[in-house]
Image 1 (cartoon, rainbow, N blue to C red):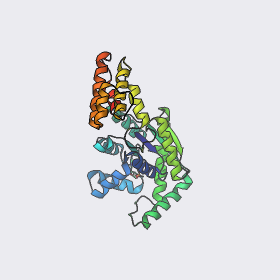
Image 2: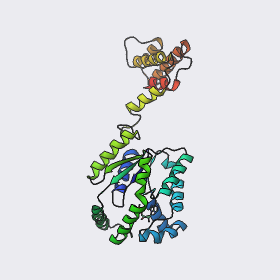
Image 3: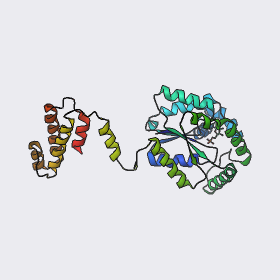
Image 4: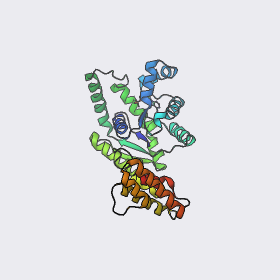
Length: 290
Ligand code: AMP
């Protein structure tokens, strides 16, 4: 899954991104977080960004595009990612399109969290109070003055992205004023509709529908069905079916997993010899194993 969360500061992008990370095991790529880390570490990028961030302005496009491009190449981003706080300008969005094309990656969609601006100041104040309570360091740019500036730069530079992505049929909008878990549910429904996630992703191993789609994707060559049927029978025999095949009988006798596997393989081979010259081995073997 590769998505963008779009919304003004305080719209809940970070919160929702973290929930998605927990649920789907993908990574959150927040340019804000990366820049704050760079500032803390005193890297050249950090030194460049420090003042701009403290005043609520935007760090130059080439800097953030470079950071994101490198980050997407990291192994932990292979499974998918949520972009949080990037892109923030049309040139950044264009650069992202280019770099994804170059890396042969597809963006599933852009989810806009739409919020009532008057609620944002309140939300950020609550966030600051909670961070103080937990003894965490409060962001320098989480003050009413800087927030006003950040909102202004969102309106002038980031809001045009709504048009950019809706023109490209990538945009979906969620009401960000709902309770956190309702927003999460709405995002999940969108991800399902986009085909970015499979139903019941919390179950371990391939889901039923995932397995089905694998089988469907395999070409239905004549004989493949037979092969798969025989393999199935062999497996059944291992569990004590009434009319087992020869090879399956063997498996049933030993009652060991290994033997069932072996018998299933044999059945596949035998059936394939008869008529399924190009039987989709992977599928039939998989089925046999199940
Ligand atoms: P955030 O944590 O997303 O609110 O970002 C905090 C600050 O980092 C912003 O106010 C900007 O100064 C800077 N920043 C984060 N992401 C970007 C970006 N994509 N483009 C330019 N500046 C950014």
